Length: 279
Picture 1 (cartoon, rainbow, N blue to C red):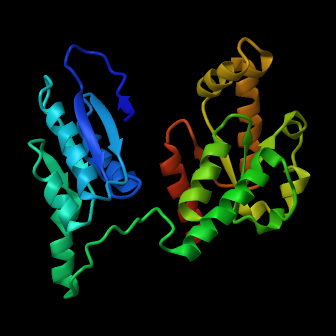
Picture 2: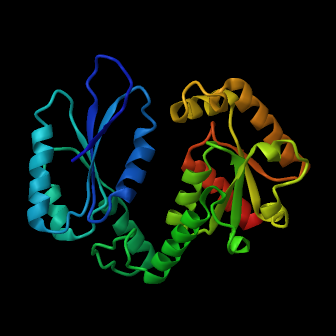
């Protein structure tokens, strides 16, 4: 059970946090972290426990939670499990438990006037086979069209991310594909592009689908140093030059831009989705 511990210093031990789920744990993590982020002065030691699908597994989880209660800091658990029998077992733990399903399901049933099934829905699984297949097709497209590797069927892209190397094109591409089923290609700006007033030829006719990514010279230099330490490619001067040229290119061709140094991949993806929706 891997832990993700905040790197902040200080003498106060981190708060053990458990994300419990009958599926992947993504929803429990997302909703739990949306609350935890409001406590920046605290450190958290995060544990994800997914696929709690039987009463026996739930009892083992309760043993883990109760053991954590013996530590120096009171732990906290977030749960999105849906099956009543499993939820009943988890609630027997002495560990404080935030049950998102329990908090909201009764209210939703009341509004809709219909009793929910209360079964493991597997929101991120293959329950909706059409949506799942669409996301897998988008992932395959993203892999093929990562970093300009293939120009085949480039016109099928919903959006084309354009940026200098190491600005965050690939993580954003993969997130949009996997989470939203968006067909994304990304195309790197290379040295010959920086001296040109035109967009690279492969994306020139698809300008209305292009979305530029920029960052700060210091951040780009830091990322490139990890890849090629002490190289000209990673120098602050080279990074500043490439970003200036890229920004000029974006302005010249009226390409929308997002700064990856100021936003997470999730935030960037949301901005791009909104652009696609209203563009």
